Picture 1 (tube, rainbow, N blue to C red):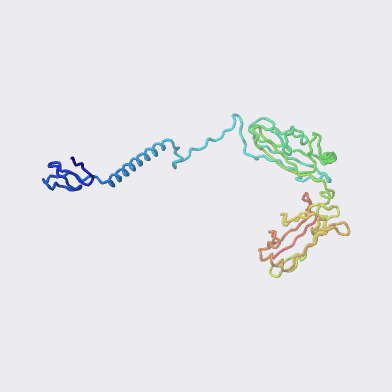
Picture 2 (cartoon, helix red, strand yellow; picture 1 turned 45 degrees about the horizontal axis):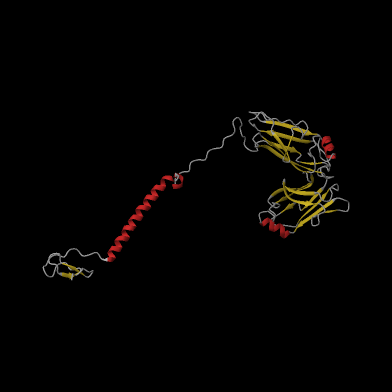
Length: 340
């Protein structure tokens, strides 16, 4: 019967005597029994180390391989500049809005016609051609908008033209519902916008004006009302009540809008005959405005640096001018006061 080796014993290579596993020398003849066998746990550790090494090598290979296909700016480098747009050959694109279209007056009252002047300034469009003209966003034919209008763009130079519709022409168009001889509602009651475009569709110039139809607005002479300010000198060190009494022309009608101007800046507006407005119709047909600030209110405004709650500098030191204007800027009543 033969004896097979087992994990627990080994045999001497010289005499064949059995010996416990792990013994270094034979107990019978003293011969060396060889190296200690590798333990199962050692084999598992070696396998894990080998797999880890292979995984690291594979990861490094993939990373450096992909880097060849990633753009430089995605790896922290500078992004290449975008290509600059170029204009079509033969066309110089001007900056937007470098021309102008202005109107005098800016608000025209059909109930009190006056001369109406239009001034058009176009920049060098780069094209010797008539620009496209728009009225309230719609393209119109040259000369159809205002009398004698024939603005043409010239390469290399700016172009300007001044046109005047006389008061008689304005009255005739207003009488026809605001429609001019070209069939356009140039003087219809509404805000209007006139624009010019070059061949590329770029805006060259633009302006706006308004048309109203209110009797008494514009026809009333300047300063035809009156304004009383009491006191006319205010001391922030010893404030007193401040009273404003304005009498506005009887030619105004309910629904008209009146603006209050302080030192040339509009600080408020009122609708005549409004349910909660301070301007009421007086017994003689004129319009009355009465406002009063108590001494405590004046003191509070002075302590805010002379500025009231709306931000208007009524009580800053110096001389101030208060005026009431109609819808096209005519002064109906005005006066001055001082603050020290």
